[in-house]
Length: 137
Length: 137
Length: 95
Length: 95
Image (cartoon, rainbow over all chains, first blue to last red; front, side, top):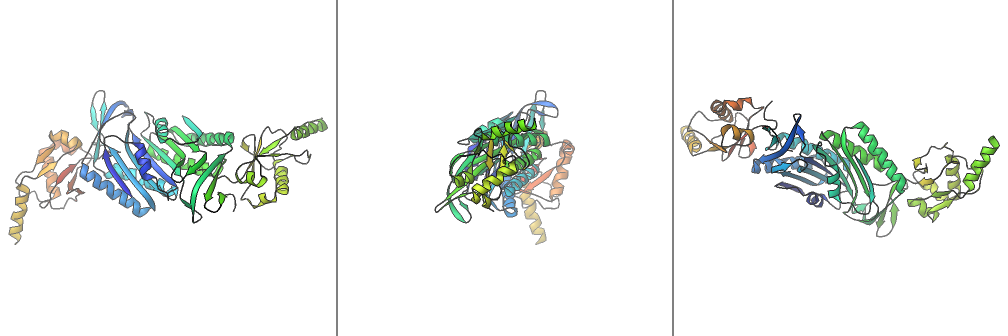
């Protein structure tokens, strides 16, 4: 009931197919994508890098925590690595459950936690420089 | 920035394509699908019927309310009509915004309100009878 | 003048106004539409609800009955004489 | 016994243990891995952090520096002598 993956390209239909469960009436999907600006400047592209075995391990821990806190049917976390253009999806978090409140709350929990703990790094390419996001205070 | 539709079949990629916005860093999608049981019995299939012009008008009102309450880039509400099998998506609600909290909150608001006010009716087919959901106390 | 506008309104109601039916209300009546009678006592949404309940007592078993006038939920005291389109809204269950 | 285990641990550290680098820390060091020196004072995660900051003062400008030992975030007082895999974790920014 847990599906965790690091991929080159995110395929949304795969997420729906996995989360679909005959006993689940609702699923919530959060999809993060590349924005066209940051720090008030135009973003040309992004690049993601992960400490892969630890990222998978941390994402599994989060999924496990979500399953302990909410009665979920399925949990999915897929993060893309490598170069991403503006508009491309970079992360998909999905949960399905009998009651939609549980899907909403757990999905939000997972993306909030992922951003704080999972060892993945994002580099923003501007026209004049590159920045590792969050690196400096 | 509002996309409202009643359709025979829901296509998820269409929802993602519409919600994607270069200024939005996150989108939240709620997908409701046909469960395999209700009232403790097996559901064979569902059928949805709408008072179509009023359903469209009510969904537009909800989308407008969401846009007034949260800083959203895009709002999408697609509901399927006709016969649906277990596992098929019947409704997709999606919102995109610069900040993910706004996407989560508005998406949840929209599905909660849709279930209360939009004139769409669901008939559950069990092996031994059919039931219009919510019709009786 | 008052008499005149009253006649106009009656005329509108009698001019073949039909109530659209959906979901369980369609099943109870056995058809998709319900023709309104030429009855001058049918002035408001509440009058209409009472008439429907009288004609089809099984409607009384529903959790609620709403009336939409021209695609908007209508209050009980709303007049129906100027309506272009009226629908009976049984409890909704979309999503 | 104490002396013996001490020697074993030192031996492990000197046996070519490398710290894996990611994101900005990889850029600061200029390579993907950092070899640990044969230095008996490097006993804990905190010792390691101090050594890294001393070698690469620019690491001190980061919002935070974490150390992962065997794929788990490690506390400052955790010994590193038995580690199979050590990584330096600069502030994460996934999602």
